[in-house]
Length: 540
Image (cartoon, rainbow, N blue to C red; front, top):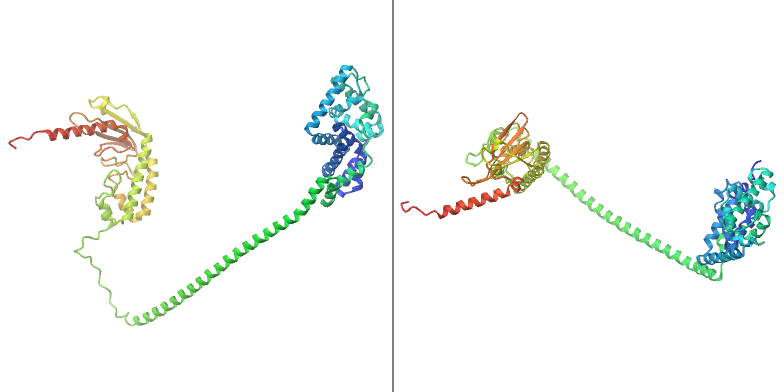
């Protein structure tokens, strides 16, 4: 049997066409159900009427989403319960629970059961049923439909509807018995629901329909406002009228504020446009003056060319420029400079020599920038080197009869890639400061201090950076020598090279042998003291 689709048709007619007749029909079909449910929850007829109106307002607003429901009884029952619970204040709920608890305690003490005492728990029992069973009871008893109509609404025959109603009543009886009520089978029957189903006041259907239509999609905002005004108290009405008086003033103030802001922005834009126009006029005048000057210069050049034309044929070539032999400078080929031996760096800390400054004719600023780039390059590499150093036991060939306490050896891995990257940054800084031509000569003067791009030529004692894998050996100063000695052995592709170093060790080595450096200083001071204390020979 096809399900009853009357509710669905009415909802769709209202949602899609705005049919007030369809909505009023929906309210008439279900207003008693909603009112009775609300009354059971709140126990107050006035509040139940208000809840009923709110439920149908919600129905009007959600009509578009409820078009797929074949029957609205279940949805309206749940909505009425939720709305009632939302409207009951905390104190009212507490008082209601105390009253119900007192009545239940009285019934338990008397060992009796009353249909009226079961009413507060009826909606809780209904919500605990399956949806099909709950709808069967709502249609049968709250909407007073015949078993045939109930079956038609649920999509079953009359006999199946009777069984479903009977099964639902049995489950309600079990619900009440589980909560301590000694109720006989069949208690939850038509007589019981007669107490629960309270008809709504005659005027409530019209009021609820008006409320729903006023808030629905087919109602205007003005209709909804009128409806709420009609149902307001005197205090609420007075507040609304105060709002209606002050609202236009507020809107007028906001409009004036917007107009003032627009005028201010327009004035600002106008001032900016005027300034741009003034700047354009000034630029135009300058361009005209420049054009006039160009035309004048062109005319003068043409006159000069006309004057010099006859002389061009008889003009003689100027004499070949001769270098002044008395000058302290001389011109030499650049290839010859590459073969000359000169130093770009004077000390291990990156200070430039006066020779390279003079040779490359550096300005003061160029010299400062070059020295800064060089020192930054040295410091960056030594930072990388310090992070890689580790102390290792000396070899027998490094001891040469000394004790291990007198020899310290450190190893560092191959840092060629780090050196290459730092050197590229250093060369870029040099090119910015000196230009391509002078950078080549400057690098030529660094060959004695820094490894070249091709390090296969080994090492020399004046180098301050060693990028390949290396062992660094230090010998403690002692008797017979107050100087700390150190040497470096470098492993590179194709072989190795060792050299003694002629200058004091730089960072990061100094922090590793700081005690020996202090010992060296003390020995040299003692040697100077003894030298100054030696008496002179009278015969000298």
